Image (cartoon, rainbow, N blue to C red; front, side, top):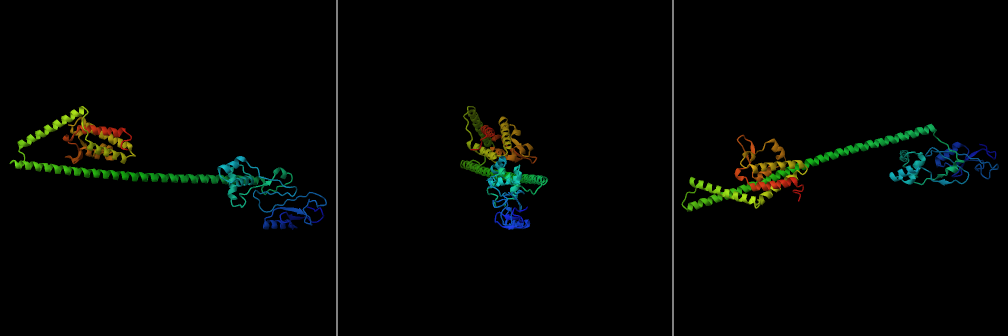
Length: 410
């Protein structure tokens, strides 16, 4: 452009006042110093259009050097510049700051420089400019209404290129979002698999511990019963020795004669009959005496079963119901041997009772494990061991265990 003084036109740096004869020199200066404010000047170094210009002509030249964030830069050397915060979409600003946690200044820069019409494009800009030194600084730009009168904008991208770039950024953002969703879904799948595996291991360990506990309890009960039987046998032997000693002192044979044995048998039967009648009479009047010690042991077995199989309440209830049926059959028909003998290999018995250790309860009740002529193991209750009072009270305890959800919890 011609100078108003007739000399050659030069370029002047508005930041350090250096002048340059050619555009190439100005660009080199801008590249080395980062200065971007250049304007046309005459040979004296005065900016064209200042009051010292003889013609008073208003000449403004805008030169852009370096790369700007949004591909555009404008310069004005006229009146005082009015700087304001750029206007952006409030809904997107709130989404970036309130929902996503970005700083206000960073969000405004992203929305302004990316020309974003969606939060995805703004986030894409933030990702590319996260290391910028001024990304968290307030952004001030010239008032667009003031700048529109005199600022010439030089765009580096054509509308077609800008649209293509925007579409590419949207696609990239969508692809990254889809990739994140796939990764999150895969991580959730792996976490679910780990939860299932851990759950199975815990259940297996608990079942093993329950089985071992039940086995230990059964062994302890068997050992206790063996000791009791041993003690009873010792008492019986002692009584028999005392009887023999008394007979020797009386000058009688140690062993009873057949006549004496028959008389002793009749006396025992009479005593048993009288005792049974007395108990039946008391029971009819509601005055029967519960065998407390026996009931406590039976109750403890029921509690152990319920606690050991707390996770399988259906199996526990099935066992208790089956035990109640066994005792009910014996109580109603004590002379029927089929009700007092249980085949241990029977599939129903194994599934309903033995699966949760219910056979220990029957042994504690009075059933004895025997082997029949066919080699089959059976639990057998002898006719003389049938105790109607025990059957009645044990049945009441089983009813409570079945119907009371808090049975054994206290």
